[in-house]
Amino acid sequence: MKMNFKKQDEASFYQILLSDSEYLPLPSAFAKKYLEKGDNKKHTIVLKTESGVEWRVKYIRIEDRFYFMGRGWLKFMKDNRLLLGDFMVFWLRSCYSIPVLEVFIYSPNGCLKNTNGSDDTRLGNEKKRSVKEETSDGDSLDNVRPLTMSRIVRKCYMYKMPLTKAFVKASGINYGHLQLENEDGKMWDATLEQYSPNQIPVIGTGWSEFVKDNKLKIGNSCTITHVKDNFLRVNKKRRRPNGFKSKFG
Image 1 (cartoon, helix red, strand yellow):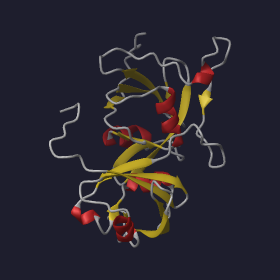
Image 2 (cartoon, one colour; image 1 turned 90 degrees about the vertical axis):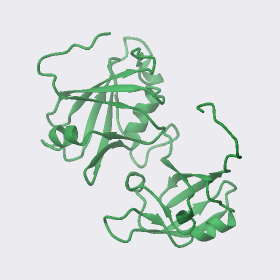
Image 3 (tube, one colour; image 1 turned 90 degrees about the horizontal axis):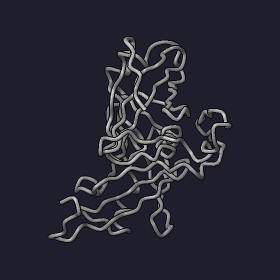
């Protein structure tokens, strides 16, 4: 399958999937020029692949940075089986009302991936093109991965654990009371705090108790998962023993 380049197809960008995260950063210059104009009040983008399937994906702006994020992006990743190292080229096909971006996905070996869409679109040509809408808050999320982020525990994280603004905004956590759960299902009360709009949010009160009770040490890797509302699950991994080498060197 070849890309049909036209003279007017000047708006494009590429991204490489470098982490297994629940958001994808966008080039600020592209977003400000093409996505922040028009009647795109809901900040919705349509992504389409050569399979003919379309996905409605939201993007958000945090200060001067832009991200694909939320359930629509997770669905796009899942349906197209995106893997670390995949190279994506986005071409702007329409910027009226809801912008439409055509996406070409390449494997790390340089070959164009066969994007067939999700399993429910592989029933033959008799089935019409489907539009993958974002799941509403009341719909089942069984097939959507929860939002997660990871931190390596540093000395300064023993009393307050910083979260990213993108994680907090995407998960819809409210500032104030939090519930933390460890991998054994035990619960702790804590608070989500932000001292000023320019500072990053942190798990404050209650975090040091969680650290103590779970024997978190400097160098431990923590995975923080948004379960629902203001409920977070925190799993830890032990530090690598001295002399350990991963398969990546």
